[in-house]
Image 1 (cartoon, rainbow, N blue to C red):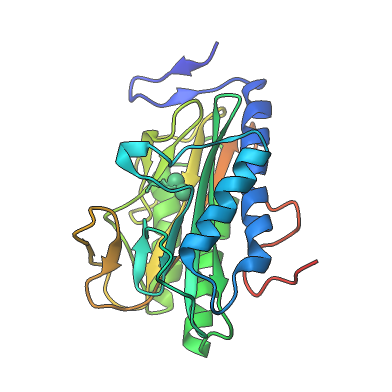
Image 2: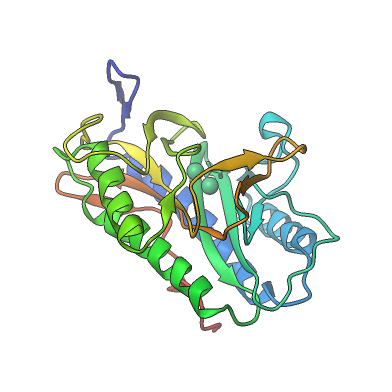
Length: 268
Ligand code: MF3
Ligand code: CO
Ligand code: CO
């Protein structure tokens, strides 16, 4: 049986990794599937409909439909939207837009949560640079996850990379434990100090999903109750993976079966 730590963090068993592997792979497959459709002129509503149908065909469940009243199978966050952008049929992608598509599915009761950045057409150099650095923040943070490390190590690493590049780290949202639930302990803060925060132990499942802004870190939530945007309207980027801590490192559950890492993606 899995154990729950005093701080509410669940430590899962070896056999639970298989469930997360399947859920994570399915979530990543949704992003792989949608990739060729992310084109100038496509609406975010269309993209969401496609994701919804694909998830259904896979026999999986969208974790976001019905979550706190959210009605969509994806969050699609364009340009200065930090996260939780609501898909709609009016907003069509324009040349130079960057967007994050975030998918969470449930497979056999396990949650897989992942997001990637996409380009519509050709991004400006400074926009591409934001996406590249955000990808680096995510992957280098995953690299240091192992038993004995602390969650503050993750935040410090991300903040270090972001600040070195002149960017800021959003502090109003964080990564989270997941497994048989969507959002669980611990909170995975994307800034902080090395050597602080909850201890990382084998069997922990959580997401790392830093949101990085070109301008200031501050965000506001729009009237719709979901869409988070940068206060200064500066561009924001994010990548998210769901991971499980092993005896000597971690396993990424949400790697792309097609090998899509960061944009531009070679379709094939
Ligand atoms: N997938 C998001 C996360 O990374 C949560 C989206 S909740 C929604 O935690 F309701 F906005 F879809
Ligand atoms: Co998440
Ligand atoms: Co997500």
